[in-house]
Length: 92
Image (cartoon, rainbow, N blue to C red; front, side):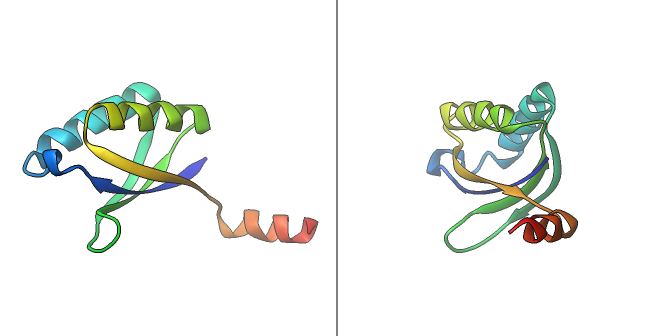
């Protein structure tokens, strides 16, 4: 399943970008999460990521770990492809 993460960086994690990303990639790998894309933004959110994970419990674990590290916070949204949306629309 694909998910979109939108989040903010904690002030304490500014200036240690490389270390934060390395730690996140290592934890994600341990949990079976794959980062498909990572984008940094200006505005309400500092980043938008697209990931692949087996289920929401894995994402919950990653979210709790991320917050406990003091890296910041993010919101998780399931991402559906166009074919899935067309199928769901047919059920409505």
